[in-house]
Length: 124
Ligand code: HEC
Image (tube, rainbow, N blue to C red; front, side, top):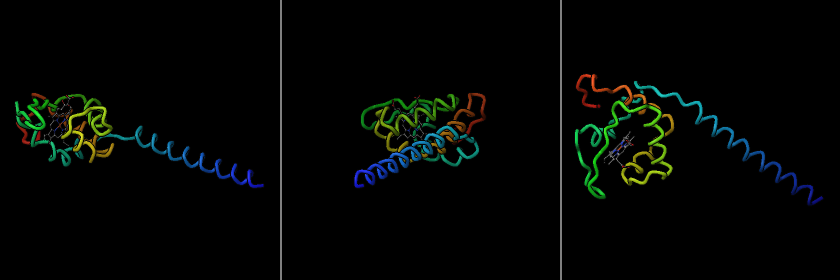
């Protein structure tokens, strides 16, 4: 009888974990970015990425990459790599850590829409 109860409990736990995982992966696959929504989310980024040739000097001198015009999926996946710690830059890790998958997708679309032909834009 005791082992029967234990077995039931384990089955329930396994089911819960399975559901949690399933809903997580559905969320990640369904995210659709919007450049318009992204425009309201890049205020955090312009301090560094909008300045041509700007070099961040913490933790050591770094050339800040231009992200305007890069591929949206690339930008979103770079942000997610910082968030997960696969990319190590400390400032970018801190910033990406505050972004949701939706934010990353929106920001990716926003920056992808900025090209050399885009008129001067303070948020570029
Ligand atoms: C304090 C300055 C600073 C701020 C603020 C900042 N970044 Fe960065 N970002 C950097 C630096 C420096 C790098 C290069 C780090 C490295 O080499 O890993 C970088 C790298 C990146 C990359 C990778 C580019 C590539 O070519 O692989 C992306 C994407 C990015 N930032 C997006 C953002 C977004 C989006 C925001 C705002 C939510 C933001 N950054 C805010 C300094 C900053």
